[in-house]
Length: 261
Image 1 (cartoon, rainbow, N blue to C red):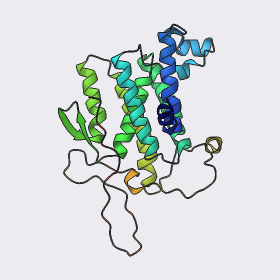
Image 2: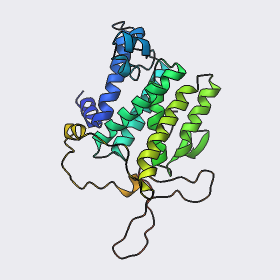
Image 3: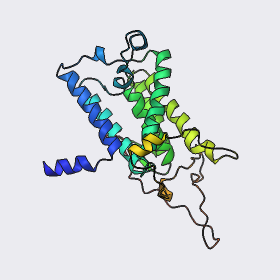
Image 4: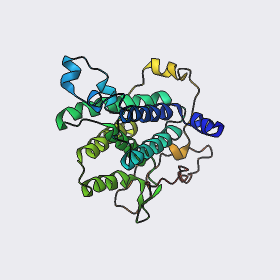
């Protein structure tokens, strides 16, 4: 029990909080403590009945306990933790801001496609952002298909189509992930570009990040581009060496992520 408790406490705070609430919500439904009818996204009930909690619970319920729930939790935990330990290391407040930004956009798009639960779309957003920020990581899908990380969301989309599931979940997750990636990683690097997503001060203070510590993200964790279909290496941010010599970009140190086998 001590080892399990230690493992749980070692999980980054945002990942630990989100996955814990997701599991507890699903267990509550499984034990008939609450009904899925009280959790699903319904704009009419939110506006006219002031059932505001539905804006959050639509991201917390992943269906009945079974193999599908297990895979969803593995994907959510894995990629949420790799993001928080990687490109969001030391920036938990920015990670929470990504949650808020993604949740607001998904809620807006969910109105038009009539999705009841958006948890899987949220997971796809996490997968998409991680895959774009780790373009060199090799992937293996059930020991059959080998590809690089940026293709992972598209592989999952194809699997949903093959299994006959609605593709809107994957499309919304990937779309919101791409919007966040462009606004956070692409646009600020352009001439006259700047960050459009600002983390509120109260979030920084909540995570004790309001004091400037000159934290530098490791080179392998910084965002980079990916030459889709090309033979060249992914574009990584340039670094200025003190001696004026060019340096070779380091290979990402992110763990090799594979889809659950």
